[in-house]
Length: 544
Image (cartoon, rainbow, N blue to C red):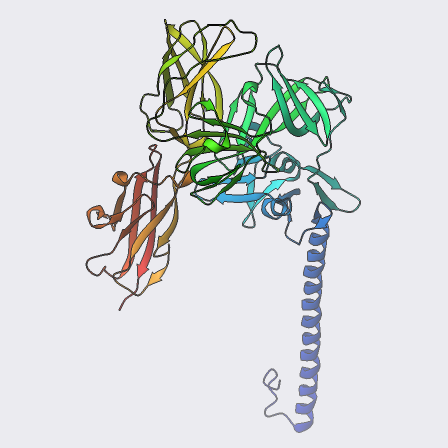
């Protein structure tokens, strides 16, 4: 302290007095600085408490989520999507390259793009209150947009200062026949028991919590279809809904149908073994049917479980909630009959003959979004004709372009991924019907392939100047890549000829040491349907 005031050379008494003054001055400075720092700390703490108090909590089905689930941006409350989705049992995945988040529940799939206020809900566009944003490294949605994204009831409790999210969406009471009893829009969600298309308008019978309802759906109504296993998201017609599916119907105040969504669980595979009404597929999936309630079709004709054999290709349609199998379409590879004997319906004229002589799909094995599947068939003239792709895409109309020749097409929509779908053509005339199947199944892939794993890891530092370089692919249904399309370049040099390429991965082991410093790898290729992927990453080889 004595160095603050020059006391050298002063008489002892004066020096001691000067040092005392210095001590008082310095102590007062320390006190003031301490108080100042304390006040600033108190101010920061108070601000933190104020911010915490200003940020509401989130309660999902009665469970309070941890801090960070809500965020306030420019005075607007945003809710973090991942913790809320997890609490509701939803899968939330984020594609950083496409700036897109996908939220999937049993009955709902929502695709959101950052900065875009329009979401795809079960394949249908829906305008949101505001777009999704990245806030504090989290995907977040404004409060009002959360309900549309998750299909949950979302409200703000001002008194308790909390966001209340409920998976039990309330709906106004609806009478049988689909007439609303309220001035507000209402929603029915239940299991389809039957579909009646014989008289207009078509009627769907469904049960909601054990109560039966009849809902009249105008023929022109577009129905959103979604497979909970991710194989299909598209729009179609009411004729394509099936018993056992879950139907979500939104009715306006007058009781008119506003929107319809059909949700089901669909998957396919090859039978490894079958016994009774059960089978095991080569992918390990176990299928348990019911002798009474499960419909079985083999090679375009009604069949029994006993006729299904090892090696048959099957597509299965089941209740998305219970997993109960309602429909199985099977195809025996090779030597499939493309003609069938007509089966008469009750009341039809005896002796009427109806045949299908040939079915052709243009020999296209892999289709992608925007392409057309062209189907033709030869058979009895003057019939009504349509075709199905297994039990997933059904009721596609065909027209008779000349006597006995029928043609139709299907435009591949985004979100449709079906592998090994049997192509079935049906004719209907004079109370009789007949169906026949093409000799080869159809593959549709619209989701582009993605890079699953890479080595060395992106932005990593490796000591080995000859690292093993590889990338693995993720494709719908593990269909794999077109090996001939795969290309790999290291530091701008094409090394494809020295690389190992398979439908699942591409790998390259440098024949000589790579130079120290950054190394860049680029992978290019396409899947069986021609969907392309390009991926580039870099790593650093350390100096030795």
